[in-house]
Amino acid sequence: MVGRERWRNSSALRDAPEDIADPIVECTAQGLGKHPAKHLWRNLVAVDLSLYKSYLVEEIREEARAETLLKSRAEDILLVLEQRGLDIPDEIRSRVTDRGDPGLLRRWLTRAVAAPKAEEIFV
Image (tube, rainbow, N blue to C red; front, side, top):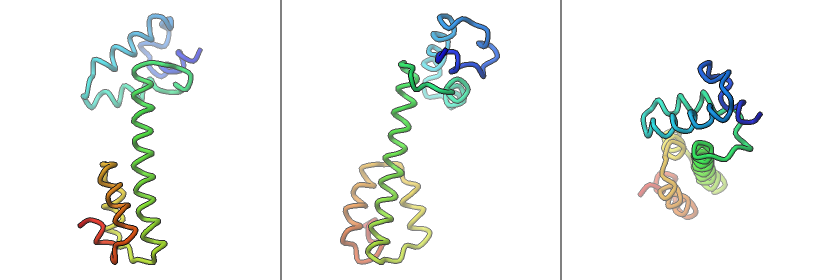
């Protein structure tokens, strides 16, 4: 029944047998490629995928892990600056939390350990 949970919200697939609906869900997700509609489709069909193994589920999990890593790195940078007693203006907080590059955030974290001012982590 886990599979049916994934697409219960989709009225077009609600009454379809799992062996028919599952490939439709997967093929639609793959066919949308990088189109913004792919996120809408995934939100529609991805209710609880914890036990389900597929291309779509693995992609969702990987994106969630990446988002968690970015958030954690940004929080670490701000924590180091705070613990060092440095002033952190709102524009610095925003710049750190809005960045989506884990490599850059890692460099900023390294600089946050010794930077005399919060602004200098970006140099």
